[in-house]
Image: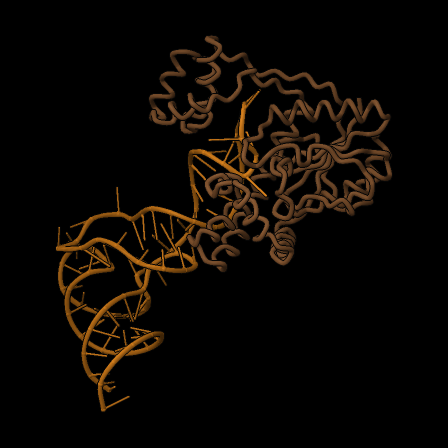
Length: 291
RNA sequence: GCCGUGGUAGCUCAGGUAGCAGAGCGCUUCUCUGAAAAAGAAGAGGUGGCCGGCGCACAUCCGGCCCACGGCA
């Protein structure tokens, strides 16, 4: 089954390209963005507006409360449902987003062990040292222990969570894709991207991004949770609490967003299937040939 | 002009009894299997303001000069 994917670093212009392509190739859009799933997080995530959608149906936006944590597994299942629906309507599913992990899990059908996060257990394990976590894992699941990053407590805890809950070692990763994905990557050089980030940051502040974060907090999203959500939400939350001033907030944000874009590229670079495009025309050419 | 304080990595600064020059941030590269805007890893980068002296050896001690900041004139 054919499917179009549009990915790229933040601020690269995925949204407007996706709408153009969706219109042209009869597509409907599934957002693959780990933050745009949350209700009320609009300006800070650069969520498309109704007007910008130009009538193209969008899925996976506003499907979760920012008070709760959303994760890949939920994404995968919701996205698969959306794909099925779009295909039934004889339209082209267009996956658009910057969360590489979500995209890969979906298009390569990566199996995620069916063990739900157990926050109580996680908090308990968090008290242990990395070394203790590692030796515990080594005893229970030597195979996973060999490949895991010993220094990464979050990974160690997740691995242990699976082993302890199922009583069995973690099955080796497997993936068998059901989709034939045409993957377009929006390419921007670093200098250009920096400027785009700066411009967009100024625009978002003017649009009332600070008020948006304030409103979220007033509606019950704690500052701690906002900090967890990262970037705009984190640094504005710090500003609202008086921990940093406005200038520090802006400087820091610019840097952090640039770093984020780089991390995204590190993820994407590994996937040799991605066809990197510099403009709309190249995108259309590839779509015409391959869809 | 005098007195004081300082000049060490891109930035902010530790250290200093002479013995391989450090941290945080930033930068580069990378990892990723239910938190991914998350969580981690590796690496690059220095004429220690300049010149001279003493010493086996000086960022460190001595002399001079330059620069910055503050005070006094």
